[in-house]
Every structure is written in structure tokens, then in C-alpha cells.
Length: 576
Image 1 (cartoon, rainbow, N blue to C red):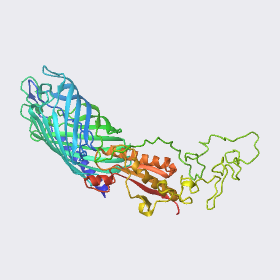
Image 2: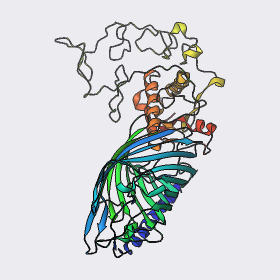
Image 3: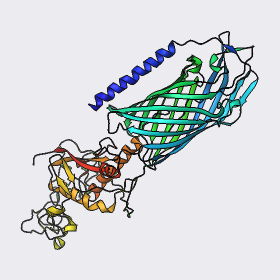
Image 4: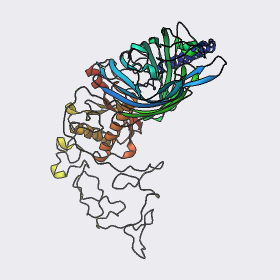
């Protein structure tokens, strides 16, 4: 149902785009008006932002978590963002080249709100208008923003939010980096988004629409040349501002592609000159520890002020995850283990001492080969020996260098049977030598009232939580015993052929980073079960789902704690 709702919203966003383009196509270029000097035109139409699930300047409805900081730095190059239309129909560039560094920062408040600021510093200004040089380094408009998330598409079919921006007159009107006056712009927008799955991964479609008011542009008239009336000498009135965008994973949770259409139009004078429209596309790479790198480009679709012939940008954002309350305990770093090659279909053995399959491709030769061997050989052509003389040939002897000792009730395997039940606890220390158990229970199975991992039809159900270090994929020692019980259940249920270790986070923070963190934590659990639980790698698969499968939809610390979890789902099983 939610997928169909996402499709309807996506089609609605496309329809809105068609309406906007049709409206702009009907607008003509008004007759030119004579101007002698030009100042106060603000061509800062592209404002990169930092937002959970946002594209580049189009925002999603979600806000950052409580006290979660965020920041960013973008470099943005524009070619001919402002053109002059002459009375003879020709055009000339008022601004030829411009490059800005956008500084971004802010913080989340109460899981539903965030406040921030954005300041562009124009490093390159190259232009001229009727003898007036436009150049030098200058500050742009300082934007103060506030955002509130009403609904989240992580738990609802659609996300909904609101955003308010106040642009202060910190720009330089003479260099065309801001309007005249202390207040350059006021803007209020409604934010909406929805998400659905595609063949490449999760996709998010979002739309922003609102109203804005801008300050005086302060032009003066002359009679020598003509120009679009978009640059006349009256105050710029209220207008429409809008953006439609979409992001999609590109086969991996770390890389997403995005495209957006951004524009505005003056309510009083909806001419092309006052109605910039631009398309922007690019990619984003989510690195570890909350860092993301973004790059892309775009071009104006109509010749409004601020709509460039060409745009290119690159930047990075930072938004670390902040957990509510975490215990501080010492951790034990686990060394990485060797990844085993895939098992051939129908493989029955043998396995090496690390649990990896020995196949013709991985076989390295016979260690016991002697000249002129006339005895039996195995399938590899290696001599079949009985080194310890216990009656078990080396190929069938689990301990070829130690004579077997037979114990009543134990199945002989060629070993001295110092650990008959194979639970890793020597017989002399094992209170249940013929029944696999755990060391914490002196070699016996856990009593029913202390079972924390129990097999059901579809999963190994946990009655406790796997705990990790804050914002890291390191398992806390307090959870080792719980994972030992999971391994114990798998050993006692050999019909479980494949377990999916599913990692989950709560809905706070960047969605891409959450999915990456949940996958890394699931992999850490898999490594623990292989290395310390002696579970074969082929029986374990690790996946991260981020916040896409919440158990509780509420925005409380208790709900967040329940949503941060690891599940053990039975994906393949044989006859019991």
C-alpha cells in the first residue's frame, strides 16, 4: 500500500513540474527599459543545504535528531548568471563568472526541529554593466533558517514539514550579492516527501513550495540601452518559490544520485526575467563518521536573474549521529577474520581449520606425500595414513596426531575426547560432558529461565538487546554472552542452513549513514559468531536496514531504544 502511495505522490510531483514548465513557456519577455546603473540584484538562487534525505537545495521533511550538529562547505561556480537583454534582441553578460564558498551549520532540537545558518562568500566576481565594474570578494546574503518536521515518511506514507528563512542584508549591492536594506529576503515553505523501493535501492521524491518577499533592487534609469523590466527600479514584491527533486541509491547504500528543479516567480510581474528556473543533478557519497561528499552541475532552463548558463559545485557535509544515553564500558577490539570463498553447490566437505571449504581451486598440495607410495590415496591423490595408529585413517581422524580414547556414550572420531560434547569446555571442567553447553553455566545448557536466545519458526528470538559503542560498529562486552547463546542455538539446530543478521537503527540522523552503520554492526555480529561461536560463514548473512523497519513509530527515547536492534531471521532450513 505504501509503495502505491509513493507512486501516486511521485506522479503528482511530475504533474506539478509539467504545470510549472507550461506556465513559464507562456510568459513573454517584456519590452526593455532604459537603465544607467545597476545595483542590488541578488542572483543567489542556488542555496545548498544540509538535510536528512535532501537533494542539494531541495529539502526533505525530516529534521536532525536532538542536539545533533550538522555543517557543510560547498564551492559553487556559475557562468553568466545574469544577462542583459538589449532593445535590438541581443544579450550581453552582466556577470560573466562567479564562484562562491557556502558555509553551512546548525543543530537539531527535540527530534522534530532544527535551526541553522548559511553564508555565501563570493570569491570570484567578474562582470561589467555600462561602465560599472563588478568584481572583488564579497559576502552574500546570510540566511537564518528554522525547520519543523510534522510527519516522517520513515513511518508514514508521506513526510511533511515547514521551513522559514530570514535573509539578512549582509551582501554588497554594488557587487550584486544582495538586495538593498537590512532585510534581504523572507521565505516560508511547505516541505513534503515520500519514499519507495526501486531496483537500485531506496528512492525519495520530495517537493518544496512556498512564498517569499525580497528587498529593493535599487536600479537607476538612463536612455542609452534597454533591459528586461525584471531589473526595473521598483521594490521586488512577493513571489512563488518552489523545488521538486528526487534521490535514489545507485546499487549501494553509500552512493546516491539526485536531480532537482528549482525556480521562483514574481506574483506582480511574472516575466521570464523575474522567473529563474534551473535543473541540477549530481551524486553523493556517504563516508564513515557522518561525512558525505557531493558533486554535480546544472544549467538554467530560462534566462531569469540567477539562472546560469552553466553551474558546477562540489562540497562535503557532516552530520554525526548522537545517541540518547550510552553506557561507557571498555571494549575489546576484534581482529578481522579471513573471508571464505563461496561454497560450490552441493559441497559436503572438507573444510580447513578456519571453516573454509577446501576445493580444487583452494587445494595447496599434499603435506604427507612420500616417494613411491603404493597405499590408498584420497580424492586429491594424497596418501591415506594413520599417523597415530589408533585405527582411524588420517582422512577420517579428527586428531591424526593423537591416539583416540574411547568413552562410553561418545561417538568416536579419532580424538582423545578431552571434550566429548564439543562445546569447547574440557571434560574435567564440564558438568555436562555429553551435552553441549556454555562456559558461564559450567558446560551445561542455559536453564529455561535464563534463556536469552530461543528458536522459533522464523527466527532466533532475542530476549535481550545487542549493545554497541555509540555511533560505532563495536560490540560491547556485556553482549558477548547473548551472542554466545545465539551460537549455541545454531549449533544445536544444524537444520538452520542460513541466518540473516538484520541490523536496524532509529529514525534520527541521515538515512544513508544509518543504513551504512546498521550494516557494519550486522557484519560485526557475523564476525563474532564465526570467530568466537565457531559458526561456518556460509550459514550467516549480514544486512543493514537503517530506519526502514521501525518497531515503534513514536519519537521518544524508549521508542528509539527499541528500534535500535539486531534480528536473526531464518532464511533457509532443512528438515528437522
